[in-house]
Length: 253
Ligand code: PEP
Image 1 (cartoon, helix red, strand yellow):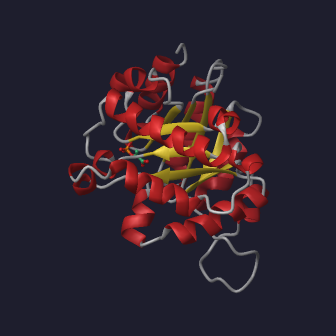
Image 2: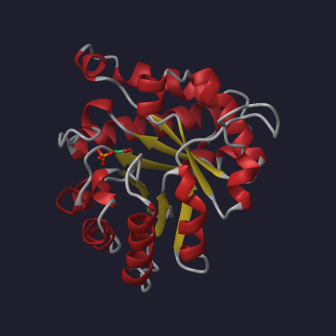
């Protein structure tokens, strides 16, 4: 049985005071939640203060990106070991904003996935098609290509530790949500890809989150689909009430 993982991606939002207040508010509000795993991913500069607030709580902390190299001359980058050093357990990799705005390739993401695993972090690896790709009926091809590239060389044991986030690009921050059936169809194909490459035992344990305009009112319907194992949440993770509404509406699933 896979536990749901509800993760908040705070993106480039909040300032020190509001990030700390959100962390404290969630810590208090989610204190009794045992049914699902919860994580928040602040801006890298606020990871440490947020991790300090959430230390010992039921809310994990993740980063939104990091570099694959070990310590050295990489100006502006963050090493995976620096994340574990300040209390991170997760790192989002290959978010569509990094693939499409910053220009990250699956090859680069793959180096980061392997570095994250080597550092003991849980990579949340994002995949997803553009609207024009969905309209051209190549959704599964695009996602499988991103999976092939992002997980190249990852062993079965390491694959079990990874989380995949299916985030149709056309649904991120747009208010447009994939229907539960659209999400399930892609999630089932992602799980089939895992089974083809790693076998059923691995496919059965890897969590596949859905992301794209998830909020309290639509979360339960999407997450009740058999291959949807959680949500990666942007906008609705920035307010205690909105994030808690998602958690409270799915914790009994
Ligand atoms: C995201 O940032 O991964 C995301 C899904 O954003 P939103 O929930 O705002 O669509």
